[in-house]
Amino acid sequence: MRVQRDALFLPLTGPVALGFMALLLTSCQDKNPYSPFDKDPGVTTAITTKSWEAVQQPSQLPNPQDPSTWSGWEAPLLSGILQLGPWPPRNPSEEAMLDTAWQSFTAFEGTRVGIAGIDSVLHRTGKIEAARSALSDAFGRFEQHFPGSAAPDIDFSYTGFNYSVYPTASLLLIGCEFFIGADHPSVTQLPPHIYPRYMQERMVPEHLIGDALRGWLLVHFQEEHYPKQGQLADELLYWGKVLFLSRCLAPDVQPWDLLDWTEEEWNWARQHEMQVWIELRQEEFLYTSKRMDIQRWVADAPFTKAGAVPQDSPDRLGWYLGMRWVEDFMARHPEMTLEQLMDQSNVLPFLQSYRPKG
Image 1 (cartoon, helix red, strand yellow):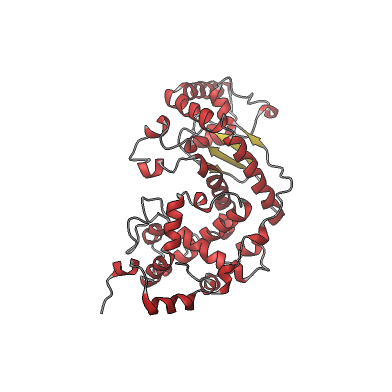
Image 2: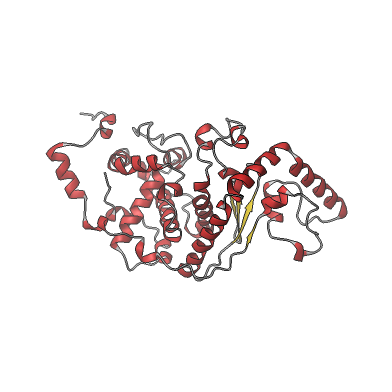
């Protein structure tokens, strides 16, 4: 007899449900797994620049022959993101071409509107300074938990709506235009086939800190810890560890902002966690290596397009479940450091520790 799949998302009631829930809930859920890691940020060596101001008040680019005039954003922005030309240019001809391309980019009307949005929404309201302070604290904690790693330089930039976060080994470049509000003219005029409305609605200032921190951590740890050919369970564990780490480093950021959700979407995930977990286990998606099936649980979308998960769900519920695995695992292992957590690659102990809410 086949159970109707949509029935998994009906409320669990009655004696059977009560017994089921009592079996799953344990005292470890009463522990706060984040509290042991709430270190004082100390002093971080991160350097902050604001290349968006260079676009706001364009002038000649820094002297390519004098590295002392560079701020660190030039090569990533000019060559990597905007692809205006090599930095530093190798000869006078390349230098002239780069300068012309830069002047055209800064004079473009779309650029001017986006820069005005950064100025009015983020700069004049103090949000950039608040983000700088929060990220500085987060990386101060990072250096204490990972003493062998250095905090990146931070740059608040304008990327022409190419990258919200552009992390390198030593630089965290933030595309501030992605956080000026869903109704700003620079956002509403974006091509909907590239940035549909549900994505535009996430371009709010509250997501800046979480996006920046999460994006840098994902890249920083990917070489040693990302499961390139792994199963869905491996993918979710990696996301879960990064999100757990983000919450430890930036404890004042709301958890829903770390996932680019609203508070209502967060509450939906909390209330339906049990049903989502049952759906994931029922279809044994955890053990698939098919990228299309994996993407259903982790990709940007209007909702999580997997199995019988309903359309009123938030997207990327796999991120949330991975974070919950790590929460329960760390609550059971309070002796474990964050460095040791990142080294844990076996999914089974996390699944054995997990007790779904809801």
